[in-house]
Length: 373
Ligand code: PLP
Image (cartoon, rainbow, N blue to C red):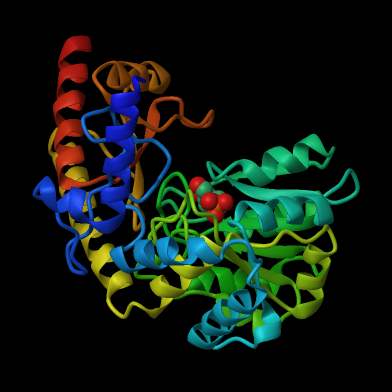
């Protein structure tokens, strides 16, 4: 980069911080309209990691910027404030909540603590693979139980599998990644009543805010064998800021914490607090996502491409040909979609982006389909 270019990029980034650069482009952020995410403007459309395309809310962005000057300190008090607000909003005791820099961290810790060659893991297939991969690498037997045809976890088969592999842990992602499909609360209740006593249940609610489903987070106040994870990476648009929550009985939280401390980025804490305090953010983003998703899934359905019913910011579509080749052809047209899972080689995951991004998705999809017959 030339010095002049570097300077203009720097000043643009500084302006972007004030919102002036956005308004100069006719894209001024307001609290109602989400700010445009700038980094990929003009580049490929990224529909591959289930990110929120507009990033943190304007208030969260401002809070993160404002706290940078204080980031020479750990600000542990802020972490307490955030934990207390989360606990209060969810009706949990403060001692049942622990914050992490993202939900990947407690997920990884759960695999390390509660799976081993002597304690298996039960997961759905397909589902988010991080936990299963880590457990398998540690020598645990991983039982993969196919989702039901409606996309729900097959809790009866999972309970049976838990008994068979002497599971220390069972992973239930609701809504599920990659499908966005729902497992009804009644099924989760059945699972909790019928699983083996030694099997802990980790419910990953990374996408819950997009759905119409009730959280099962209240279970952690009643039982010591349920861990619920939340993240600020999805609906709150904070994937790159890193903030996640583990909710569980204090004994389980203590076990998770036994693997070491890792203080939170202060920018994430400030943005997280601003997000929790926003009374309309969840409803607005959820409605936006549902509208764009319905339009896209409806468009695909009219052309004969079926999707598993989704209540999240991603869906899986049956492209009726090799999914990896299809994704590559989409990428060649500037639209980067997600991948296929081995159980469904002809289906691909797609993240729900903005209206404009999904228009580019439709164009590319149509072109790839007509190219390949
Ligand atoms: N859980 C699920 C279901 C996910 O899809 C992801 C990320 O995509 C994560 C957890 C981890 O997210 P993070 O570490 O950003 O909170």
